Amino acid sequence: MRRKFVAGNWKMHGSLKSNAELLRDVRTGVAPLDIDIAVCAPYPYLAQVSELLQGSNVAWGAQDVSEHAQGAYTGEVSAAMLVDFGCKYVIVGHSERRSYYGESDAIVAAKTEAALKAGLIPIVCVGETLEERERNVTAEVVTRQLDAVIARCGVAALANAVVAYEPVWAIGTGHTATPAQAQEVHALIRSRVAREDAQVAAGLRILYGGSMKPANAQELMAQPDIDGGLIGGASLVAADFVAICAAAR
Image 1 (cartoon, rainbow, N blue to C red):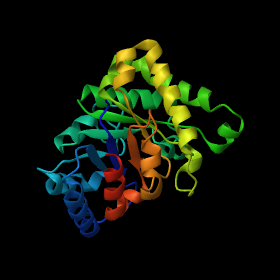
Image 2 (cartoon, rainbow, N blue to C red):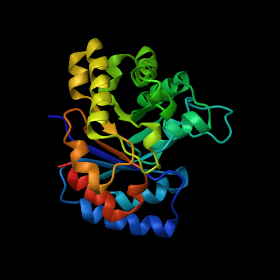
Image 3 (tube, rainbow, N blue to C red):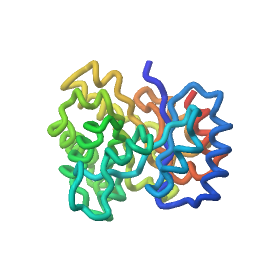
Image 4 (spheres, rainbow, N blue to C red):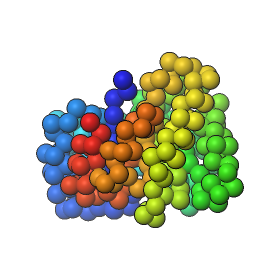
């Protein structure tokens, strides 16, 4: 059975004071839970997160990474730098990176490869917009995004990665895909990987990343192909994040 995984994405939130309070309560609240848990924080706070989570059952990671190993790329952060701060995970291809910063499928695939080469576990985000869902092209969009990663990195690389399905229309909008809608896309992702390698597909953890909250977490994660959540706003409230992690059991 695939182990459940809940990752918190802080986005551009936080301060040294609020981080300390949040991490203290999260660390205490999830201590008894036998699932994989991570928080993905903004770059400036990675040293603080590393210090406060050392020795706990909560891993940490970043929200983005450069596709370049090093060089004249002012403002970029390499995978090796993230490893220096003890990161285990990194989010790549989040819908906000794709839409606000023009990250193409090719760039997301390159970032995935850079993360893997450095020994990080990429959380590869895929998902459709509302307009794409209304045109009934969800399967084509998600498959195209996933295929770019498989073409560049090989399907075997997904054994060391996590995939997150985040319907763009359900992020920060208060709307959530129904369990059946989410399961349909998660099953699509697993079947696409299975066409290349059934063993990798069976072990692949696929997270749901569209407004998962304590009220809907258990029902979503009860679906056969939903292996956890990539949590946005709810990860900034310790009680909510702990409740979602508990629901993953």
